[in-house]
Image (cartoon, rainbow, N blue to C red):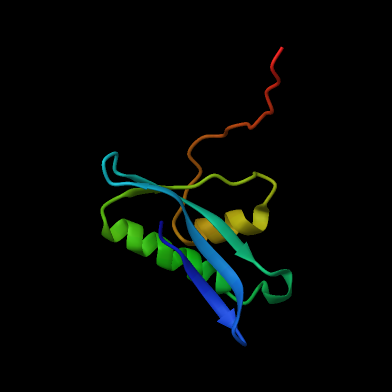
Length: 97
């Protein structure tokens, strides 16, 4: 996959990457985006995610992601990067009977 990160004083404080990249199907899913709480609101997560998205778009891939609808801070970042809401989904835990 594709990953970008930011180091501060030689410590990785922010990272963004991909869950999957499929040139065969023309799609990539952005994910694994994290910024250490002490380093948030400095643009690190946005910068990392932006670089990942730029690289995927340069490969002519459709770029998608999933985000919890209550994660308004992340949604704001994704919207600034050009993402738009497409469809809601739910995640559930299944149990065998």
